[in-house]
Amino acid sequence: MQNKINEIKQYILGKIKEIKDLKEWQALRVEMFGKSGKFTELFKLMRDVPAEEKGKIGQILNNAKQEIEALITDNERKMSEEELNKEINSAERIDITLPTEKCTGSLHPRTIIQREIEEVFTSMGFVVEDGNEVETEYNNFTAVNVPENHPARDMQDTFWLDNGEVLKTHTSAAQNRILKKYTPPIRAIFPGRCFRNEDVDASHENTFFQLEGVIVDKDVSVGNLIYFMKEMLSKIFNKPVEVRLRPGFFPFTEPSFEMDVRCPFCDGKGCPTCKNGGWIELCPCGMIHPQVLRNGGIDPEVYSGCAFGLGLDRMTMLSTNLNDIRELNSGNLKLLKQFKIK
Ligand code: DAH
Image 1: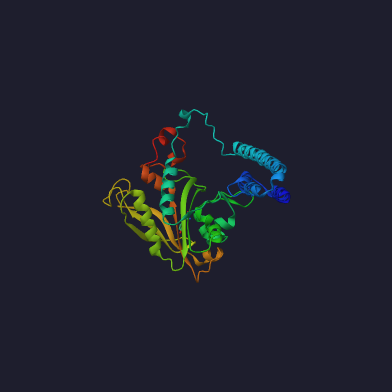
Image 2: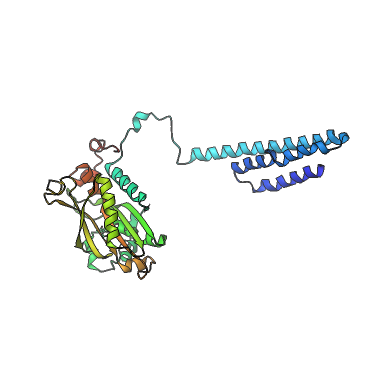
């Protein structure tokens, strides 16, 4: 019996060296004193100890139990204090003593629409990815098939940094990183802030938001593109929508299109929002160029893909009836406070 007690003590001493957190200390307590714990079993064996030794062995056993219980309790306390301190000092700290009146803000309308769109796409199996605001020249241009000196670079007036990097001019800049990160099938959307050296007016901003999407799989076709966009728009506008494609040009897609949606406000009859044209230009898109796939490490002989670059500001303006894009970056609280989550 005494040997068994010593064995357990040795075992515990070895174990203690490996324990890293509170959970493991708690597990050790169960292992020792739980229903079929090692000590519990030893106490059961006491009934087989000869009467004349019971007192002595019982005392040894009790002492060992107390010693080990104290050790576990001490360490549990220490660990839980440490974990609590870590939590208190972490960024997740919330000051629950702050008065609530000061926290009654509202979400920016663009955030509201972005979250709605993200929700629709995630329900269709898309992951939501992030992009950088400062990008390498390679990611912003070369990787998406816009080589140096190509006239297509002039399509986007770029803010260049002294170190040769750029403020990303479009969310397409994240395509290469995402193609490399995942193996097909890929369904990803990536919203983000973009910058262009533009003169600002009611429909142009130097700082604006896009929401890009890519789908890469075997046999992806324009049909997939149309399907996903229609699904998303129908959910956002709360009714079935009709879209049409017109030819477009982008170096990263072949063929490229401009996607229009039949005006959801007048059902195509003509109204101020669609400038009486019945259609609203919404989203450039296309089949991902084989070179862009190749740059992302994907074999275009096996896989194909489509991509789109939705203007988030435009979507926000449509869903809020705002007609000046500058309002969105104005920080005008009177305006922004009118928008609450639906
Ligand atoms: N990156 C383009 C722009 O900002 C928009 C775009 C066009 C994105 C076609 C795409 C696409 O993914 O397929 O002008």
